[in-house]
Amino acid sequence: MKFRPLHDRVVVRRLESEERTTGGIIIPDTAKEKPQQGEVVAVGPGARNEKGELIALDVKAGDKVLFGKWSGTEVKIDGQDLLIMKESDVMGIVG
Image 1 (cartoon, rainbow, N blue to C red):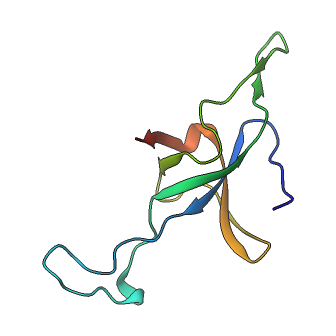
Image 2 (tube, one colour):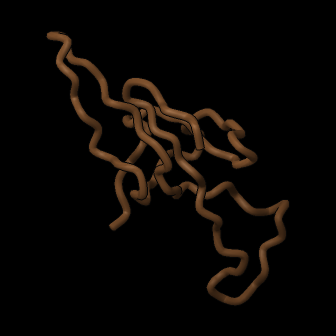
C-alpha cells in the first residue's frame, strides 16, 4: 500500500466478525453489524504540541485495536476497504 497518513491519523482494516452466535445460529449478512475491532495498517508521524514538538502515537502498524461504531472515514485503497481515523478515536489496543 502506498498511502501514508498525516499527523495523528491511523489507517485501520476492519476484522471480520463471527458469522455464528455462541448458540450456533448463523447470522445473515444483512443483520450483521460492522465490526468495531481492526488491525492498524499505517500510522502518521504524530501530532504537534503548542511548542511545535512532535508527539509520537501510541499505536503502531500491526496492533489490534477497538474503535467506536461511527469512527473514521471509510476509503478504498488498492481494492481494500479501510478506515482513516484520528488516534483519539481508538479506544484501546487488544492484547
